[in-house]
Image (cartoon, rainbow, N blue to C red; front, side, top):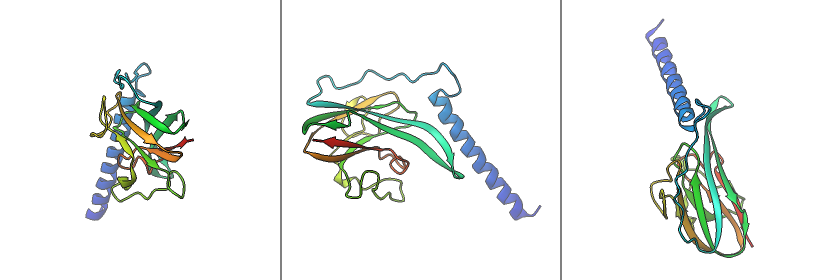
Length: 182
């Protein structure tokens, strides 16, 4: 075997080991390796939420092979997904194994999920109306850690909004949902 062939084989083996290690680590955290393992959610919510409360569940299910490439399996659930205009408190709970965050933005003209993603895996957040990304507290922080919640209270006018997670590559992998304000 040539030096170049040995080098390519080494790189391929390392990439394979790193990919396998990531999948195993995520699966272990999520309890896929132990049937009885469950994520415990800390009881941290706003003590007196104002207005209509919208519960947002942020989750992930590890990494899946999609067309030969790894893709994160992430989700955002918004309940209810339609509210009256006025004061709305978003309570975001992370039920996954990765850090997440919640941002609320006016829906783009081309529809929810169409924002351009930069080379850093994030969108332009300048249109954000509010963010919940501080574990067991309200407002902006360093991400909602697994098993905790964060919240933000906003005044929303009638329209269509996009509720997203903008941790790197989460939006690009489908971590967005529609909220209708009537």
